[in-house]
Length: 185
Image 1 (cartoon, rainbow, N blue to C red):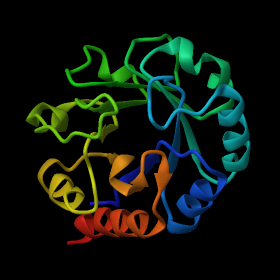
Image 2 (cartoon, rainbow, N blue to C red):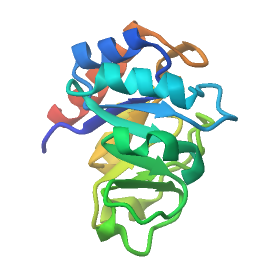
Image 3 (tube, helix red, strand yellow):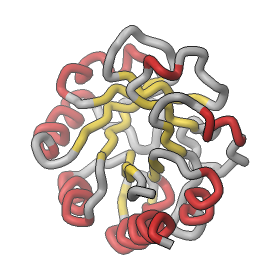
């Protein structure tokens, strides 16, 4: 099986983007949900997106469309917890989408950004789209999750932080090594 798609989300600084690129992550996410501890304003997001563009795939992430709308046309993928009519939609949620085949991605995340790990239902393996597992993943559990569910990809945020919104390069190394190692084992 091929290496999983690995995304690191909640980046708040240019060096976080640099680390993701250097370490071989497939995508980075910028959180525009105002209630998030990893919130970046549309202006901050624009600067981070510009820093990442052409180097790594970019996601604008929020619960609601209105929060990502100001930067939606600057990123590769829009990730929200509500259905919007876009070809670049990564629908996030914890129940099976009725039209998964029309989505760019489905991000299974029962935590809605809280970083709490929840049991992943078996139906995620049967979705006819690229499914990314998120919510409470960390270097310590990502390999087991990949081995059990064989998702298209995984997404990490708080699991690679020294404090909310501050990524830790060593944890980012440990996470991607564990994720990539799970598929080759």
